[in-house]
Image (cartoon, rainbow, N blue to C red; front, side, top):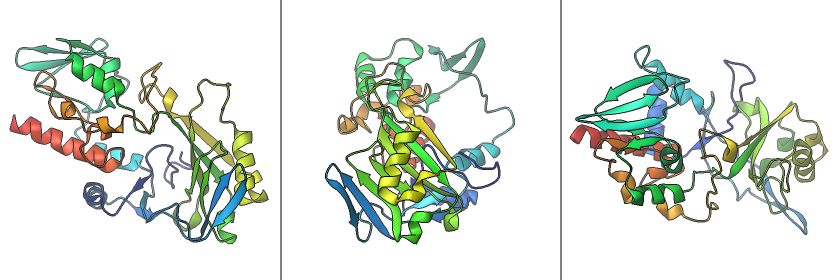
Length: 310
């Protein structure tokens, strides 16, 4: 979400990176991208069915970095260094086939031949919506289908305000709630609190309009409970249900809850190319830092090493 095209952006997807993550730290420095620390100063708030409790010292947040121009600025900077015409948008891949010593990628009427192909997608999406010739190993299909898309069953909400009023009350903008709809909340304001915003995660509802629907009214009511009456007048609210995003989670997917099947992240099957030439590389395939941008970069590094060594 960009209040203005060249100004600070408020991420509806990936948001943070951490000091112990060397690849993203080095890449940000190499690309010269502006960053700022996550605001964590102040107290946090805890909510359950019995009421609301103020947590002195904010035990919810940890020191982390933020991208001043949004996480999208990483992709934009990398894309700017590629030859013109290399990136082709609006060209959904529908099939991958092997022929002799090359791989053919089918994208509508377009055909692209390459020595190797990298599917930089969550494993269940990579195996769900593409035709493979020859077919993929059944063990890989079963494992990929059971691997959760990171945050794929989650909705993310960003709420923009005129100012970070919660800070005047000594609050960090962090909260944990068993009442909802937002289960986890953090300060998403830009450097020095401009633009001012909060963001939170909620479990995606089973169906639009059904029980558990994440509405702007319910979100506002919760923020008023947690942070006071000034939360009643946001400038705008953005809700993205990642379980319903076509290019993130397979259609009709019954992805396991986040507490289950995480052991499939970085599975050995993901470290071996399909038929020797088709590679899976996403944050879910990473052997470490799975779910983070750092994990995606690790998966990319190791995939490139495998291709070059072959």
